[in-house]
Every structure is written in C-alpha cells, then in structure tokens.
Length: 294
Image (tube, rainbow, N blue to C red; front, side, top):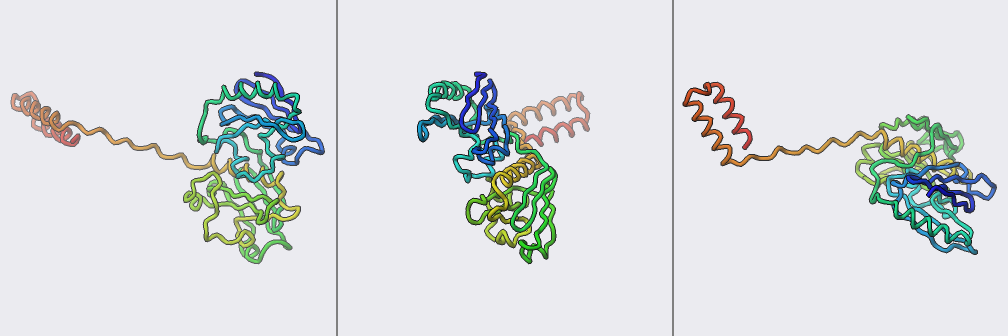
C-alpha cells in the first residue's frame, strides 16, 4: 500500500502491517484528536473497514478496532461524538475512488477476528493529569492519585482524605463523558472487576454515588474535558491490563490406562518375579506404579 490519504483533520498513511494516523493541530480539529497527535494502528488490531457517503460532498472511511485492542476506545465505550472518533476519516468526494481501492486492499489484509487478548494500540503515555470538579487526578504509570478540592469535594471525600491507588490493586476503569449528565471517572478494585469480565465493567450496584466515592472524581462544566480525562482513563486501563496476573495454565489430566493392559503388565511382572529376575522390592514398587495408573 504505502500511500497517504489526506482528509479533514487527519491523514492516514498505509503500510503493509499498520496504519499511521496523524491528526492536524488546526483550530477546527477536535481537541481530543489534537491531544492524540498521531497513532500507529497495527492491522491485527482491526476488525472491519467501511466506506460510506458523507455530508456535503464528502466520503467517510472508517476502520473498526477489535474489542480489547485499543484501551482508548474501550474506555470510551461508544460515548465519543463522530467528529472526535480517531478511526473515522472524512474525505472530499473526489477521493472516494482512491479510498474505495484502499478499503478493498485493507480488508484483504485483515485476518484477526474477535476480541484481542492484549492492547495492540499504544495508550497515551504517563504522566497524565486533569482537574475534576471535586479534585485533581494524576497518574504516573504506577498509581492513580486523587487530591480533593476544598470547594468541590464532598464531606465523605474530605473525611477519607487524598487517595492513592496502585494499578496492581485495580481491576478496571469506568469513564463517563463530561458531555453527558453524571460524567465521572471511577476506579474499580480488582475484586469488584473480577465479577464483571467486560473491558470497562460497570460499577457494582451497591457503589456510592461518584460524589461520595473516594475512588471516583466528578466532572462538570469545564472540568474533566474529554481530551484530558479520556486519554487518562485509557492510560490507566492499559496499565491495569498489563499488571493483571497471568491466568494459570489449565491442568490437563493424565490419560487413564486400559485396565486390561495394566492387568497383563502386572501378570508379566509376576512371571519375572517368580523366575527370580525381579526382586521382591522391585516387584512391589513396580506393581504399585502400575496400579496408580488406573
């Protein structure tokens, strides 16, 4: 492939094994895309490719990441506006023919299916921080810290004090967009997340409201904007997944031997013993080993 498609707000460079997406920094470019800068997406991270007509003489090329492949999209859980979707490229209509050719070529190269077993697209790098309504959140790659605001934090949070959460103790992150009611970022302990195997598990039903939960920060008008809080959530989610203990390999039981075969071998062993070719001790040990295989 090895060519470039330049659209509005981004340019996609296609290689044999990946797509490099570079986002513009113009004033019209959504702030989330500006914050991302550029992203290299391996083809194994993608599940599908679509090309559809857009508005006002445009065409829209979009690639669909596999669940689990991109922590940013997993954390977003479908809450992004179309204009902020990093996997959506809007093109002038005159480029639709070229885009269709690339879409066909790209589809032919996609072989992976189903959820990915690891993050394939790099998350935003730590350190990261943002200001929420009730405190300041920071992440250094090893732990998430919440420092409460004197004016916004609830008495429950002040009573609990500032919080520090090592990623090794976390099992997930729940991000709710600040552009919708109830926007917040909540950290889930490993024990609670284990009960919900989804990429971004919901909070347990008995969890306190975010403004009362010391493991959550609350968004609001001008606080926790998408371009700051979502990359933060993605970085934490990627670190949590990397720190998760590896699943123990399944134990495969040893196959059972045919009882008739065991009986024949014991009979033959007895003949050797009677002939004086096997000692009493050797006979007893070997017979016990054969019986254990039943």
